[in-house]
Structures are given as structure tokens and as C-alpha cells.
Image (cartoon, rainbow, N blue to C red; front, side):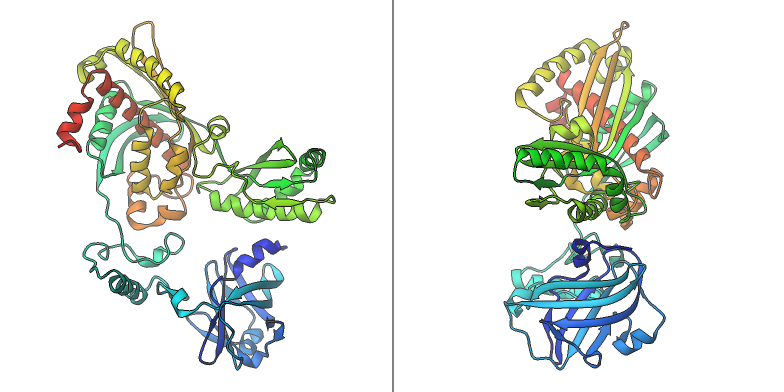
Amino acid sequence: MLIPSILLKQLYTRGSLRNTAEGIVFSIKNRLKDASLLEINSVKVNKHKISFDQLMLNLGDQQLTTHELNIQEELPFPLRKVINFFVSDVPPLKAGEKHHIELEFKVKPFGKLKLSVEDTILTEEEAGIPRDDHDDYSKEIIKSRQQYLTNFTKKELKHINHYSVDTQLLPGNIENFIGVAQIPMGLAGPIQVNGEHAQGEFLVPMATTEGTLVASYNRGIKVCNLCGGVRTTVQEDIMQRAPVFGFENALEARKFSEWIKENTPSIAQAAEATSSVAKLQYIDTYLASKYTYLRFNMSTGDAAGQNMVSRAVDAACTWILDNYSHPIERFFLESNFATDKKASQINILKTRGKRVTAEIVFKREVLKEVMRVDTVSLERHSKAAQIGSFLSGVNNNGLHAANGITAMFIATGQDVANVAEASAGILHTELTPENDLYMSITLPSLIIATYGGGTGLSTQKESLELMDCHGKGKAQKLAEIMAAVVLAGEISLASAISSSDFVAAHEKYGRNR
């Protein structure tokens, strides 16, 4: 299996090169997929070949000489496993200078690999926060970091260092772990969702420090339930990465874009080789000046998928660079065209993550009785708000989708920074012939996961399980529940504004106390 050179270099742990009493040490970490180490063929430091007698491999739970490794059939090298290479009987390396490391080894299923990197020796001052290469989440190293913090700040920890989370679940979610931030969690619902993937009543955990938020969503949910529940539809599910290629002139850029279209099947094969889940759906091509911008659109299963797609597109671009026969003057893996964690018009048009719509017909009498507001007043407010949205240039013509999305993101282990994109929304209202109010909200870039990332952490997993949304095959269900809750929040706040309850509610429950 061919591993692109750019991807192969990621095996090396930057900053791991250190002098020891006996010699030097550096580390590699499996950042590709589960594998088996078959043999070490060669190790060179600054072009000097290291004798196998000088080399010791430390795997955390065992130590092996190179000879012992090479006579074994295979050594398990699972994803995220760290191997420290201890080299003895070599002079200390100078700090602050670049040192070249070359490693040739055989790994199943990748075959023979050659890793060539440069690294520098860190001084004690540069080393900073304590770390442990083998287990950076053990009680001992966590206490060392807490003590380091106390020594540095002269402040004793009283709350941050108390937690119930299993720290061995944290790799891949946090570095330099010292404790937790405790955020209050409330319960909204149950909300009736009438979707393709979410059907029935759901209690929804919401984590926030904003008073009135949970109460407001509960009020909206009550009205939604009285009107038969919220209908939800997932319309698209896609994730992007957008590399850019630069050429001598615009004509060469156009020719390259034509070549990309002709070779999409081969590009897809290179991208999909990095994952059993990621699948290339299509590549959008955009031309500007002498640049070709490619927007890779990939499905990522129940993971949010940004890292998965980055790795896949990295491999695809390596194949492109190796196979395109004309000069490419410059290349960058991300052009800012994927607009990762930024609001953008293209994501509203083209989708990033889940594109999901929630809709309902609110009965006029229900709104009058529960919300003390008439549908005609709500419709007039909606029209005025559309002009306000146009004048301000917002990415959401609704009221406060970000409130509900953020609270649900925190509770369920989503990447909260994705709220920058997920907060985009298209709100639509219209009066029916009976003067009931049809309302819908479309969330065009709801980036969520039910598998991987923070969704596997203890409290986040528990929150997802409350809605039967943890694990594979549940992401679109979660998207529908979230969209339904967002819609409930829209009718709640719209009614509060139209009936002049908005300030009074904050006076009673919120921060105006």
C-alpha cells in the first residue's frame, strides 16, 4: 500500500528529539491506521548510520533491541501507539540546530517505508509544560502538570482538578490535560420529532451558563408538541477540504482543471485509500487569476469528518502532484475556501456537514393561548426582521439558532468551534389561509458527530445515549433532533419579542437580576 511522503512524515513526533545520559532519543507515533511492525532496516542520524547494537526500542509496556524485533514475526503497532528510539554511544546533539533523521522499516500492511525528517533539540527552558511520551494521561503526569501550574501561577487548584472522567479516554481530545471545566446542564423537552431518522419524543440535554436559555427552549417545545411535533428532513450530508494550485498563467490553471475532471476516478481512489469510511462524492472546481481552487466534497459516515477529509485530500493531492505532467508553481492543502470554522455564503449554498430542515404549522389558537401572541403579529415581525437581516449582512435571518446549537454541542461532545458555521440558518414563515403560521428553519452547515472525537467521552457519551444517538448510524438522527430544538427556540424568542415578554423573561430568569 503506497503511503504519500507528506502523510508518512506525520509518523514522526516533532520535538521528540532529545539528548539523554546515554545518547539521544526520538519518537514515532502511528497516525495512519492499525498496523504491525515487522522489522527495522536502517536508522541514520545526521547521515551517520546507527549500529543495531546501539538501538533500543521502548514501547511503553516493553523494551526491545532491534535484533529482538527483527527475529519476531510481527509486533503490534496500533493507531496512536508511540515507539521511542533510544540511541546509545553517540555524542550530544547541539540545541537549536536542525538534525536529520532517516528511518527505514517494514510495516504491515504498508510494506517498506522510508521516513526522512528534520528536528531540533529543545532546551530545558523551551520544554515547558511536563509531558510523558508513553502515557501523557496518567495520574502521575497530570499531577506534575497541576504542580507546574501552581508553581508558575502561585494559585492552588480547588475545582479544576476534581473530575470523574476516565483520563485514558482523552487521547485525541485534549493535550496537556490538567482537569475539567464544569458547565451546568439542563434538560429540555420531551420534544416530538417527526423525522425520517428521529421519530418520537426526546429529552434533550443542554449545557450552558446563560439563564433563560433552557426555559425558553422548553416553552417553544411545549408549543411545538401542542401543534403535533416538528417535521424534520436531512437534505444533504457532505464535508469539504479545498486545496489550491498555482500556475504560470490563467490558461495553465484552466488546463489543470480540465485534467482534474478527466482523472477524478483515480483521485478518488487515492483519497479513499486513507479511510474505510470517507467517500469522494464530487470535486467542485473554481478558477480565479492563475489559481485553480478544488473543493473536495466527501461523505464521512457518523464522524464530523474534518480530519478524515484532510487526510484523504492530502493523499489525493499527493497523487495529483506526482501524476500531473505540467509545472505546478505552488500548492496549499487548504485555500480558506472550505471556510473551516468560519461563516460563509458558499456553505449556505453548497452545504457543509448536515443540511437539515425543521418545519411545523403553528395553530393560531395555540399561540394565542400559550404565547399570548397572534400569528399575524409574528408574520409582521418576521418580515421586518428579514429587512434587518439584509441590512446587517448576517448569516442567519432567524433569531438565535446559535444558542440551542451551542448548548447541545457542549452537552454531546461536538467541536464547539463549528458553531461558527452551524449557526447559519434560513428561516421562513408564511400565513396559511386559516391564519395559522407555517415556520421552517434550514441549517445548511450543521457539523456534528455521534462517533469519534469528543462523543466518546463519559458525560458526552451519556448525553447522546439519553437520545439514543451514540455510535454508528445515528448522526442524521441527532441532526434532526437538533434542528427540531432550534425551531422550538425560534418560535419561543419570536413570540417573546412580539408579545414584549423578552426583557421580562431575562429579568426573572437571566442575567438582568
